[in-house]
Length: 495
Image (cartoon, rainbow, N blue to C red; front, top):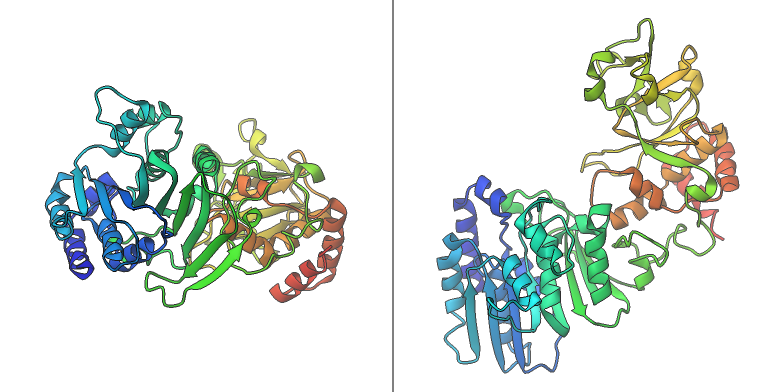
C-alpha cells in the first residue's frame, strides 16, 4: 500500500506549482522517510492508540504508521486517527490513502479540514465553541515550513497558550506536544534551524521543559531528504516523549533517505545540550567520543572572561554606497571583504574583486571604522560545498601602513578589544584555535547553517588568554601550518 502512496506523492508533488508549495509550506514525505519515522516509536503497553497527524498532506506518514501496526509491530487493539489537512485540494488523495485502512472496526479515521493551529489552541484553552481534542498517545508530523509574521493571527493565537515561535513547523510541533498525554510520543521531521539561534530559543525551552529527546536522525546531504521538491534544508528527525525521563540520546546519521549507510551512536544528554549553555542549543554530535573542547577543564572560558569581543563587521555597504570607491584614492581607507582573505594572506587592494576596495573617511563613515591593528576575522557565509564552516584569518596593521583606520564589511565577524585591535599573539592564537577541526565540528554539531553569526561565536568555549597567547607564538613560528598540524596542536590542550 505504501508504494501506491509513494506514486501518488510523486504525481501530486509534480502537479502542485512551486508558488503554492511555498504559500502553504508543503513538502510531502517520501515513503522511505515515512517508514523510517514510523519505525522510531517505542512499543508501549497501550491498547488504544490515539494518533495525530498534523499537516497530513496525502497521508504518507499515517499510512506508514498504520502499516507498521498491521505488520504486528504494535500491540494496539484499536487506533483512532486525527489527520489535519487544511488544503482541500489534497483531501481526495488523503481520503484514498486512508480508506485502505478505515474498513476495519479497529481503525477510526477522522480527516479534519481545519486550521490545526487555531483548532489546537482552542482545544488547549478549553474553548466552549470548539470540540475538545483527545489526549493523543502518538503524533507523527511533517509540518509546514513557513514563517509566521509577528502581527499574524497565528502568532496571537499561539501566545494564548504560551508558545512563542517564528515558523509554522515549530508551532505545529509545540502544539502537538502540548496535546499529547503524559508518556505520549512524537516523531517529526524538521529543518535543523531550530537547534540554534535566538529566534528559536523559546521553542527549545518549551520542548526541553516538557519532553525527553530519545532519538535524533541527521541527513548528511542538505538536498536529499525532500529531493523531489528541491528543498535545500538540512533536515533532522526527532523522537520526543512527553514527560519522559531524559537519558542518553541515540544519534543516527545517513547520507540520504536510502538509509543504507546509517551510523548509530549513543550520547549522554550533556553532549546534546550543554548544562551551562544559556541559549539551550541542541547539538547533534557526529563523533563517538568527546573532543578536546568538550573535556572538563581543558577549554572552558567565554569571550567575556578573556576580555575579547566579537561583532559583525560594522560597514553595511549598501547603506554607505555613496562613500564606496573601487580602488584607494585620496581621503579613503581600506575596506575589507571576505574576498580579500586567502589562507594567512590578505590581498589588498584586489582589482577585479567586484567589490569596492576603499571607503571615504569623513564625518559620516568614521563611526563605522576601526583603528588599524591586529584583528581576527571569520567569514559569515560559506557555500554548502565547502568542507569548513568556520574560516578565520588575521588582519595585520602592516598590510595597511598608510592607514590609521580600517573598514570591516558586514560579511565578516570581527574579534576585537573594545573596537580596537588585539595583541598580535592573541589574534594569531584565536585564528589557530578557530581553524581547528574540533571547533568546526563543534559548530556543525549545533548548526546546520552555512552562516556563522557573531552569536554562534560567542557561545563557543575558548582557551584561556594565556593559552591563546602561547598558541599565537607557536603559530607565528610556523610558516604555513597544515590542518593536521593545527589539530595536533589542539590535542596538546587536553587537561
